[in-house]
Length: 83
Image (cartoon, rainbow, N blue to C red):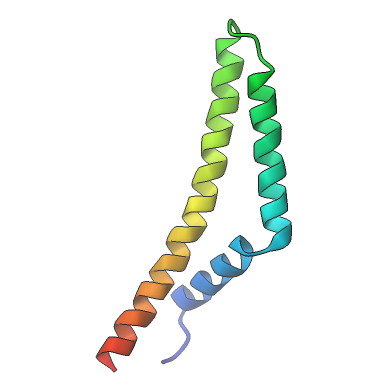
């Protein structure tokens, strides 16, 4: 099986998502955003919404890496079944 661009993307996504530095940065950023969200006054709706959206976006980035990894894994399984 030759290595394709999709294989490269899958492996790169796995490397990034398993990276200690990435996970530390992700965790610290999410903790900071949650802390800032919880530190707002209830009447600061726009600021609270901004922090909420940033937290959700951060989660979406991590989920995008998982999707890319899974696409590569599915392709490998299909190739093995057809071989």
